[in-house]
Each structure stands twice: as C-alpha cells, then as structure tokens.
Length: 538
Image (tube, rainbow, N blue to C red):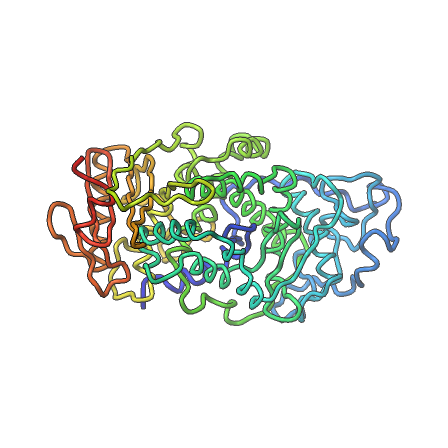
C-alpha cells in the first residue's frame, strides 16, 4: 500500500469548500491558542435585547417548529440539531431595533432552529441555516455583514457541477498551451492530456460547495435531490467567504492576482481567515452551540474518485494547510484588526504563508530570463498579455510530493511522505496543519520565472529559472530534481542534459544548470532542440 494514502484520502474533506476559481477547504479541528470568543448575549431576558420577537416575518416562525431540537449527541440521531446546550442556546430571542453583531436576518447566533438533515435540507431549512450561520460567523469573526439580507443558497448536483465546472471551455488556445506546458514542467500532466480538464476533474471530485462572488450566492454540491449538510462546516466556510467578499472585496483581489504563486499567497489570507473562522465555529458547536449534525455515514464519506490527481491537489492545498497558521500568527500579534490590515497588502508569495515571519519583509525576487530562442520558436503569450508565471515554493513542493501518490506508483518516491506530512508519534496527521511545505528540497526559495515556448510545428518547450537564498540551497534543489528526472525515466546524456524515455508521459529533453544561487531548467522535444528553445551557452 502506498505510504499514508489513506491519510491523504481522509484529508480531502479539508479541501471541500471554495470560492469560485479556487479549490475548497475546510478543517474541523481547532488550532492551539485559538482567538477567544466574544461574550454571548444575555438570554435570561430576551426583552432586554430588543423590542418585539415572535412574529412570522422575523425568519423564525415560518421556518419550522423548534421541537426538532435535541440535546442528544448520539450518532443515531435523526438529523435534528445536536450539541452541548450549556444553558446558552435558546429557542427564540427578540430581534434588536437595529442590526447587531451576531444577529442576521431575524436570528441570533445562539438561537435554535427546526431543521432535519437526515433526509436532506429543503429550501426553507437551507435559508434558515444560512441566516443563523451568518450570525455565527459574525460572532466568531467580530465583523458585521454590511447588509441584512440572507445570502442566497443554490443547489447543484455533482453531475451538473462536473459538466459545467468553472467555465474552462472559455479559455483561448494560447492560454491552453501556456497552461499545458506549465503543468508539464511540474510533471503533473503529460503532452497527451489537457491540464485544464484535469484540474476541472479534480474539482468535480472534491468540491462540496463554493461561494460565487458573481452571483453573491452559496452553491452546494448535492449527491441527491436534497442536499445533506456535512454538519455546518462547509456552510460556515462559504458564509465566511461571503463576508470576506462583502467587506474586503476579495473577488477583485483574486482577479488582480497575476501569478500562480501570488495567487497562493493571496489565498493564504483568504482561506486562512476562512478556515480559522470555520475552526472557531466548529469548536463552538462542540462546546456551546446546538448545530446541525453531519449525516451518520459509516464509511466517513466519499473518497477521491479514479484518476484523482494528488499532485495538483497538493499544489492547491498550501493556503488551506498553512493559511490558518499564518492568520493565527498575526492574530496573536494584533487581533482581528491586524488580520484586517493584511487584506490591504496580501502575502506576495506562498512562501510568506508557510513562513509568516517573511510576510512584509522578504518579497519574492524578480527573476529575469531573456528570450534566447532560435528562429522558428516563439514565447507563448496569452491574449491578455501573460508571458510568464511564477510557480512558487508550493508548486515545487507538490512536484516532489506527487510521485508517492501518482497512479503508476511503483513503491518508490522522490521525497518521503515522512518529510512532508506533519504527524505525531503515533503517525496521526495534524489536521490543523497536515502538510509541511517547507521541507529541505524547497527551503531557501527566493523567486522563480517560468516561460513557455512553441515552434512553427506546434512543438513546445519551456525555460524555468529559480533563484535561491544560497548556492547550497540551489544545489540541494538540483539534487532532488535529478531524482525526480530519474523517477520519470530520464537518463543523463552528459553536460547536465537528460533524455526522458519514450514510454514516459513526459518524453522530452531537459537541460539542468546550476550557477551559484540560480538553477535554470530548459525543456525541448529533443536534445538537439534545447538550444533552440534557450541558448544556454550565450
């Protein structure tokens, strides 16, 4: 059995919710020293909170009978709310005269609701759950939703989601070429595959829900006619993303990200904040709140389907693994006000998320390459002018992790999972920070630049230059990269050049050069064409 594969399958639930254009994540465990909760409103005399209450327009009476509530935490529960009541949950509270933190759309964060998740949630139950989740997210985050409208919640079957995806059919031919070559450089997708489709297939397997900033709505992916909530974890995550977008305009921040690594840095604050909110929310469910129970499944839920790509999963998982720790780091140094400030200047790289102390003080280096291609070869430029990418530390880490989980796994690996899975003495993975993206082979990353090239015959190649903090770091990376080449069937032909066997999905030629603190990788269809893509002797 491949190492820790069962562990990674279980961790897929941590990447199960998303904002559009990103891969989802949610974690159920609380980190050490989590931010403290605000005091709960006094429930001994609801009239002291505000006037009124109990009418059918406040989002309670029309939603259902609270008789479905129970204090039981037995797994045999029918699907009605369970939890530790602790004397804090109440069936109904008076509405305030004006909007208050911890109250939204007619519900306080500690009110009970009458819903039944055992056979799926109907439209009224979903609306009720969202309204209370909005109040709860406000409470744990200490941030008010700008309006008082319940976030719309749509339902899409998994089959529909797989078919529609996130619109990858709209990409131009130049963009597809650029993306295919980029994912080939990471040894994720061979030349006979469509990298965009592989990414879509991965999302189709792992996404449970997402927030759409375009429609300002939450979309739940359902396996049946009516969606069953996974407790309130995915719901809390997507409500948190809605709050982020409404307050910090995160949709615009994502549209303005220009590199994969810069996007990973941005998601470090977005997903880190969202996941930390989720962790605090679930902690309250365990300690104080009555919450919607997850379905009682004996198998722990669906695992990854056939063909699921762990390399791409690892690449996209960095913000979800290390983002909560990044946010916690700055919360401890200034509370939510300090976290809020980060949205004005998000992390510039994935490295800054992995190592929070580098944020604001160690920007990624501006690495230059220069076009040295021969006649007949041209740099691939997309219709919006993108001519390069910065792949970043997270992509390189995933590139080295992937062989331990790829479909043709043969019992070997490039980097042992022991080096990148955070486990305790019993081998249990730390669910709040499961993956260590700072293992030695990628430590000391300073910056990189990737460029794709194509010739008149439609053949492709690339140049990838990576700058390190020291010559020792560059040498260490190059050594692990040679192991990666060997894993994928490459043989040395001398002078730092390699040919990858014809039966490999990555049949090509590679030139690997180390010059002090810089590593340059050139790829071409054949050894004779390496200098046509990039003249290495110039």
